[in-house]
Length: 187
Image 1 (cartoon, one colour):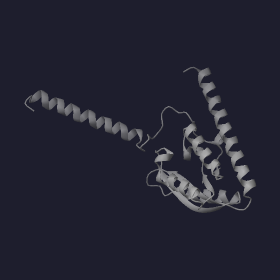
Image 2 (cartoon, one colour):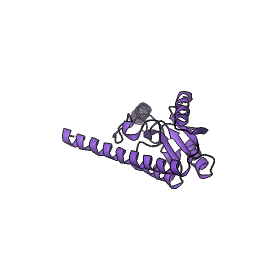
Image 3 (tube, helix red, strand yellow):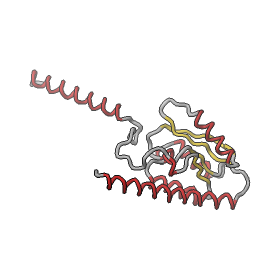
């Protein structure tokens, strides 16, 4: 890939993130004008396997309070799955849909989805229900690239090292089977 192509992709990604940031800010502003009283939001975190997320939840609660909202519930998932396959995210949506909370606060856009189309679908879902979607770090301030070709985790949360180990194991078993078949064709 040449430098010009890479630069144009970065500009596109930045403008897409800016558009989504503006859309989210517009939704949230309308909701705050419609419902000016403090609102309960779900603190939602996506963590690595085995991490309790307490530090992130603390940061989310502080930010919710700084925006005049209160933490009504906490929900957590393990990194790697798309939003529609996460039980914690389904809990967030259910609490909003059933009226137990008035939105969600997350650390950054990638917490919901690193895929911009998927993130926009979730953003619009919240907007259609007059629910807040608050980010600690705005879309344009996130630290990850939205269109990186390789992600650390696949859709099931399996890391590339684990995948490489599985491939190595399959190769070793295949080599063993071929060796056995060559030495004893009756198998």
